[in-house]
Image 1: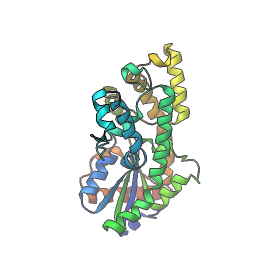
Image 2: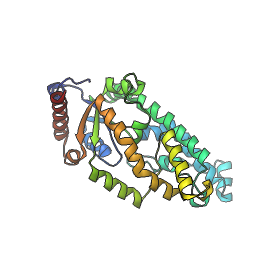
Image 3: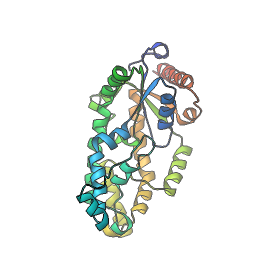
Image 4: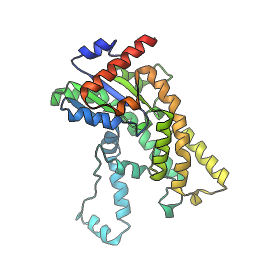
Length: 289
């Protein structure tokens, strides 16, 4: 790790961290807090995915839908209107909407082959955005004078790396340039995330093997064909299983860095609080080694 001890972290003139864990446990909250202090550069992986790597896919999909409306079609063909994505750090809806959900097209679903194609696009984009992290550390310092850097990753990071491979190229690049910090949730946090998702099911990325297995099982158990699937019902059914699938992968990733609890993260009020939390996590790792 780039900080050998709690004291090394406290004394470091440049603090560089990467936050990972389930969506909804405070990664972006902490990153926003650090950025708002004025001393930290906030690199959002999901924002990078939705702008640099999938921006054209998102915009083209919106144009494709607009071309189905005669009034908008004429305006587009004459370059009279512009259609683009207004994605922000705190509003990633254009990206998730493009990913979509599989199932009945009358209910907003995608054909499964198209859904897999978009999932594959996201895998490539997320890998590239993660590998951009060292570049943005240098860029943040050289262009803007930021010494401190926080990488705010998406919940699916554990799906695009192999934490058991000591030579995983993404994890090697990230651990050599940042201190990787797992925000670990409790069973109560998981239950709340499931309840929250059930109220507003959203598209997400899954490992292809996991996704294909869950899709085939859902069709079989419910005696459905692809076009009969309610997209929201499928992603609701899949969500808790996806969290259970991800948990051991996050835990394996924690060996590349340190672990903090979501409960402690929720109590953070300042950069000083954050620095103390990371120092405590480094001390705890040293003690358990």
